[in-house]
Amino acid sequence: MKVILKVDVKGLGKKEDMVECKDGYARNYLLPRGMAVPATAENLGIMKSKKKAETEKVSRDTEHAKSIADKLSGKTVVIEATAGENGKLFGSITNKDVSDALKQQMNMNVDKKKIIMDDNIKTVGDHKITAKLFTGVDAEFIVSVKVKG
Image 1: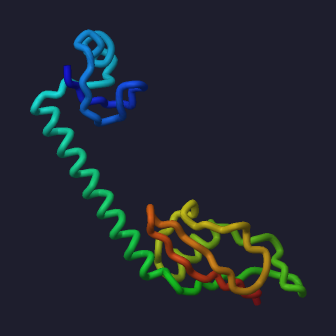
Image 2 (image 1 turned 30 degrees about the vertical axis):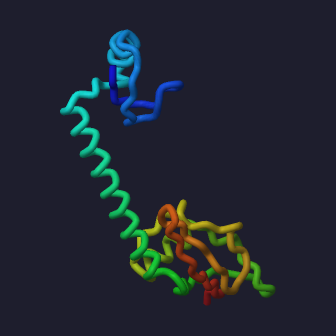
């Protein structure tokens, strides 16, 4: 019997795969537990439309990420913080602070989890930061830390 899997099934296939399995296994195990649906013409059509919608969503998200990356790449974001005489900050600047500064200065919503920093910024000066906006879409920009006041 041909079925379309709704979840990953060990030894059989991954989610949304169309697989051939024994009739009893499908009728007595997969179908009652909601792990699969019969591979009818209607269900195949639904699966194709879901895959098409998913690919459209991925391409739309990729285009959106590329547009943000184009606007952000090479730009400088200025953050003011209090610092001692030797240039060390009182505290540190985190990826959340960088995300907030991007929103304020450039009107860009970049999730703090997408801003990649080796460590929090603890000194005054320019620091190169990478934002991983989407799979394969990165933007490098500079965070310039200035002394407040």
